[in-house]
Length: 64
Image 1 (tube, one colour):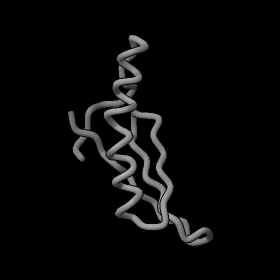
Image 2 (cartoon, rainbow, N blue to C red):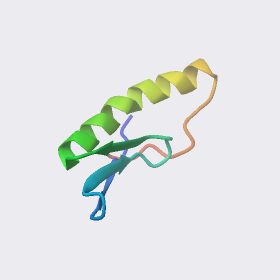
Image 3 (cartoon, rainbow, N blue to C red):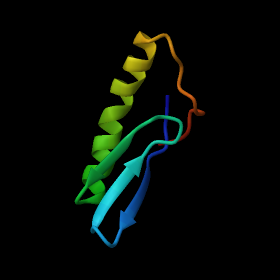
């Protein structure tokens, strides 16, 4: 499965926020690289938790 990681920069806080559309994942970090890494690491953990609850992701499988 492939997922898109969307990164936004907040100039007020000078931090990056990475989200994964279709999954309830939000990663906040000082660098873009770290935000993306944290979001990528969270994807399999989130999918495993959904499977354990008998649920499926709400979004489409997208390119990472």
